[in-house]
Amino acid sequence: MSMILGVPVAVLFGQLLLGIINGAFYALLSLGLAVIFGLLKIINFAHGAMYMMGAMATVIMFDALGINYWVALFVAPVIVGCFGMAIEYFLLRRIAGQDHIYSLLLTFGVALMIQGILTNIYGVSGMRYSMPELFQGGFKLDFMYLPYYRAWVILMALLVCFGTWFMIEKTKLGAYLRAGTEDAQLMQGFGINVPLLVSLTYGFGVMLAAFAGVLAAPIYSVNPVMGSNILIVVFAVVVIGGMGSIAGAIITGLLMGVIEGLTKVFYPEFSSAVIFLVMVIVLLIRPSGLFGKEA
Amino acid sequence: MGNPVDQTDIQKSMLEDMKADRRRKNILNLVLLALLLVAPAVVYPVFLMKILCFALFAVAFNLLLGFTGLLSFGHAAFLAAGGYTTGYLLSTYSGFTTEMGIIAGTLAATVLGALFAVVAIRRQGIYFAMITLALAQLVYFGFVQAPFTGGEDGMHGIPRGYLFGFIDLENNLAMYYFVLAVFLGGYLLVQRVVGSPFGQVLKAIKQNEPRAVSLGYNVNQYKVLAFVMSAGLAGLAGSVKTVVFQLASLNDAHWHMSGEVILMTLLGGTGTLLGPVFGATFVVNLEYQLSQGPLGDWVDPILGGIFVLTVIAFQSGIVGEIQKFVKKNLG
Image (cartoon, rainbow over all chains, first blue to last red; front, side, top):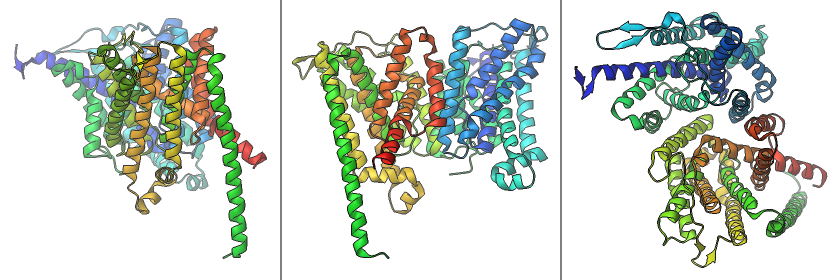
């Protein structure tokens, strides 16, 4: 078998693939955070909890109602998105305009509640979710094996990421969103319902998280605490990329996944820490992040 | 320009207000001190010590959040660094007296705090919070992997030892008064720092950082110093806590703990000296009461609910609201 740097090619590519998958999740999650922060200046600590709710909803809907993966792919994000909009409407709206720290603390409290309540109901041990029939098996490439589902995850993540970027940067709706956050009063004067726009934006960011959760359900262990650890990693990703740009969040997410995957090949013990180390280095060299604009 | 006579009148009345305020505070502090001195006659000393350790932790944290305006989401790292260092030294080297172990733990946390500060200070606001959180997670992984921490099991059976070589700390009362002394030392230090010219600059940074910069203050230097001090005191709290309970575990390093100290401070009242003490007392009590009852599993959601409520309904916290009330009705 051929080797690269003393590592079998199959192992290297295998880990690289896992890295890209993880990176796809980081990208989706940091994209949602960036959308919410960039447009609302809210740092959503409940993002991990929303991701978890997406995954949990998929499993629970299947177990209780027999709702299959394809339906869940649309329904779960919508449910969680509505839940997010309710949180925005009843809680976050009350502290709008205050120091950003308060939105962080508020959403942290919300995350604790959601996670705690679901833990009490479902326990912390993982729930099983079987992969849809269609995705059994995979492509046999000559240097590696690519399961269909993993290819699907990468494809969907890239598609959704691109779609989001396109919508915010290139469409009229996106222009309204950006303008509404720039000068809400003026937009209101033009007859745009800004509070609704804010709710929708938060809901959309949350939907992205929940969508990532549905994608994660068949391959990761689904449990109430699955969101909290990944969230801290995603925070680091966001610091590395700088929250200034949507595209930056996507690229950084994928990149960090790959770096993590490669670390797993060469120095496995260190793989869970490497992203945080990258963050430290980036901060020391370029404090505003790789894609950040502000100082 | 007003009449000079008026001005001195105003100054006089302001001075008198301040004096009355200080008198009230002194009386309150003396009453609280008296309560703390006799408390072990009524309440189980170990429980009191737990409260004092967390109160010191929260007071240390508040130096940063309340008086400098920096939200650290990684203070658990310092609590744990202090605890693990002290625990390791006391259980490995029999020659170490307890106070030496505690000093070493405090120093370890201080050094760690300096490392955090140098990195985190480069960004402000919520980025600062996220960076400290990420750094603390890095430290957490370090503690999981490190050979001396006992990984998931933690350290157990750490000897309390003899203070200064002759006071037996296995005696709960002796231990209590030692912890009380440490707590008071830390509290008075923070009080002194906040009231000093240094503390005034910190407040200026909190209120308007760009202005503090334009006034010629080296803002970053002040922030780093405040951070290091806060980290050191948090480490001291962790060290003492480890001696009291004779164990050090990953719980102290988890981000959950960083969240808890924020809640204690926020609930008690940020920017007040006594607030974190009340907040810590409240949270530790609440957790204990809940764990005794049928709601034992619901601690997390209830804490989360209190978090939400505090942020939405009363951001100045318990002590802050009382202060407002007193100012309105007595001032």
